[in-house]
Length: 450
Image (cartoon, rainbow, N blue to C red; front, side, top):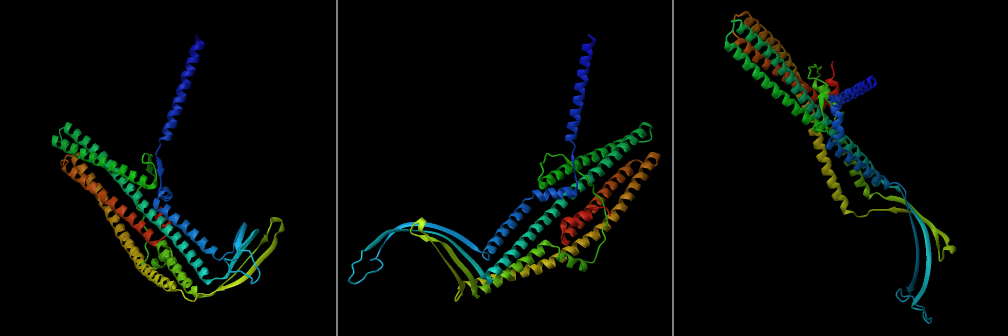
């Protein structure tokens, strides 16, 4: 009997242990993933359609370059044939006066096994076409990098939106905590006969308003995380949270004149246009080279005979020079290329001014936002002091809680102003990172603690 009880007890303890381990495992699996800004950027770059499409353009241009290169490399073909035929001498006008010849000769057969080879020795047009395809490939690689920079900037903005929403939740939660404490103070004073029912009702209304604001702020966070997950290629049902809260980190500023030259050497979109211009210039040189002579060497070698066992080795090697005497198409192509060069040069000039404008605008916004943060921080401190003083006056019985409620509203406004100012400052840093080029590196550097 005792052994049976012990056995049952052991089984029960084992079952409880397994259940506990299973519950711990489920809890670990359900723990939300902590997403950093760097993680968000990497996930977006791996999943974004624009980046993937830009990658296919690079692959396509690599194929075009290989085709241009093939025109300058040796080419070899093999051919094998066997035939069985007869020929009409009459059709070819073959006759011998006084000697009767058959109108048809044959049948006869022959076999030919042959390898043909060709190599362009001097081909300036082909060489320039190869250079143009290489510049076009470089331009598309830079366009892909520009697409990545745009995605990095967009994802950083979405991450910032989620950070701002989370900061508003924390501020709303702190106001609910304060309102709960002040409601308890109003009830205690009402019970002690030193406050009226209106004071209690006023505190209840304020608590209800703050709870409503907290619910709205939490919903905003959930929506911002859904949008962020969608742009990262994540399952919308994946539980995750932000690992980096919204914080203010000042950034040393430089004169825009000193930043522009470095930005032009780092902006992928600007460099891509420059490579496009180089490609078009090489196409223009290739167009002019169409009138230059082209030297090539070609030949063949093989076995030829009337039977497989009776073939003889034959072959040919020859040098060849090709001249273009008249080519109307070259003039039309030259006009097309000249128009494209003019368009790209205009785009380069416009983008140069645009980069300068982006840098100056980002610096202006950065300076303004930094000043707003300073003012908002002071306003938040003053609002907290005002609330504390109003609470002390109400607790001392020298005033009702109208001052307290007013101070709570002022604090809520000050907190919102501070969050908005910090968000604007961070967004200005992201905009500057994009304007300077090398967006991912700059954004991550600007986001770190100084």
